[in-house]
Image (cartoon, rainbow over all chains, first blue to last red; front, top):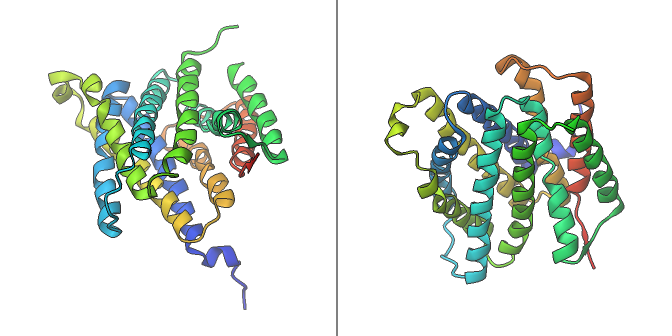
Length: 145
Length: 143
């Protein structure tokens, strides 16, 4: 009898895979969209795509309204910065660069998060993250050639 | 050194999303992941008045607008799936690097859907970037 690896039985594995596929589809739709319309319009319409999913999330698991001013401010800041990042990503796709290269380059954003986590949250880098920083620098140098 | 235009746009994306990664950590210290997602969506709409293209919106190709809307739906669904993976027992130290691998889907599908190919050097860069993303997404320890 064939043994099924434990990870394949776990729900989190399939949810993670769904995430990877959805984000892959998001990139491809983004590139196809930016072939036709400007980056700012892409971002304008893109935001509406969040409405059905946000409603779905709250319907599937109704959670009591949370009024933490700090939490709301951080999340709003999140949305604004994610929107600005999305806008410039659409502009990058529209500028005619290679989609795979742009996607891989912008997926390096944990590089900034890790550095900020050290500076702001006083977290310490583990050795894997230090090696990761090295690979990120090499990747950025190659993309800039 | 001449850098292509996409590089500068991509750099702004990198920095903005890098800060988002930090704010996400801070926001979920105060809110459930569900409400953090809802307020993030509200944050998107704060930018809308500046992005609204005016009446010209109705002159754009329907196909382009449909791709833009689908792009938003897929992005949000991916965010929900990430949340669900963490809620259903996935460790952040495994789920975060795993989900950061979405560029692989693009690399494999771009030649067929977008008819784009990559050079050998770009392929090396992409492999380095993927290794970097997986390693950087491992959990830091607190000081």
